[in-house]
View 1 (cartoon, helix red, strand yellow):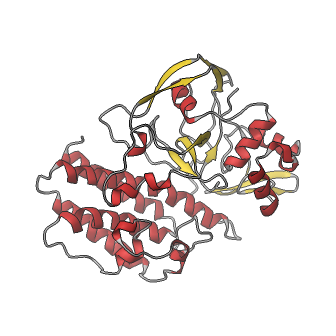
View 2: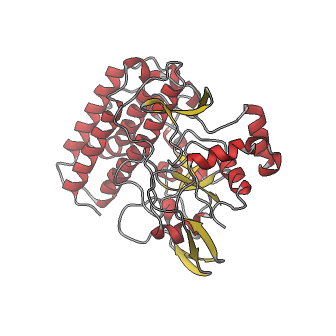
View 3: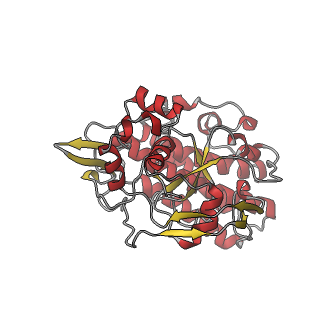
Length: 386
């Protein structure tokens, strides 16, 4: 466990980074919610603050006074144990509280945490602070991708930042890494922080396989489009084909064909697609269909974890063929924190790795992200297996 002073510094560093992510925004950007999966930036600022107030200050700080009695209702996300909350689809209707009021709330709670931890605290509370920090880091990733979706659906396609490096290249030559059949250990096994869905460590048997040392590129996806991949029903799951037809899907999210050239909306605005950059913003449905077209498949999360030491990762969340399920002997934590992961272990696919939107000191080889098969507003890509 991190020492209290270091943990408090980690907390303050994390709080500042969230606000830095919002610094390029105009005040009008803070409230927009184009679709239900995207939350307004103002809501992220408030929700990550509420987490510390609800689970630490309210529960453990003697004589703590809530900043605003209504904020638990406004900024609770999905914690049934904690009480009523604003329906997710209505977060964009929260013109009040104002952005200024939410920033005042952040300052109030951040100072409250600093004051509370001026005294020695027991391990339970230190653990709550640490999970709260990583909870905010999760929301930093969501915040950035939500900002991109908000601006990417603005008809003007505005620039968020001229300096954000969204499409890092993988300079090494493509090779297939051969993995032998056998037993492999899966799961977190150190004293460093992890989520409960990474526990406990267990063995899995894997048949031999080969896994690409590079992510699928934009040029690979262009070739798929040119070959009519979005029109070949036999490449797709039935549900995926329905999704393509009903939503008129013809390319990854944010792609636009203009005068015969492929462009994509990025945080730097509308730019020509770099064919050598790893593909992003594709759904599991698209990843599966592309792999079928290549005569390959997606890795299971166990195959990915067993091989991850042999290739670079972290520029894209990588779809796997694994359903999001509990590991052996998994048990949810008691109370509200038990709602953090376990309740979502149904109808989701596991993603591994991380992305350019993932903050520092957050991801690791055992980290299990998860999303529904049609979603693609995150920086999601794929790596092939054969």
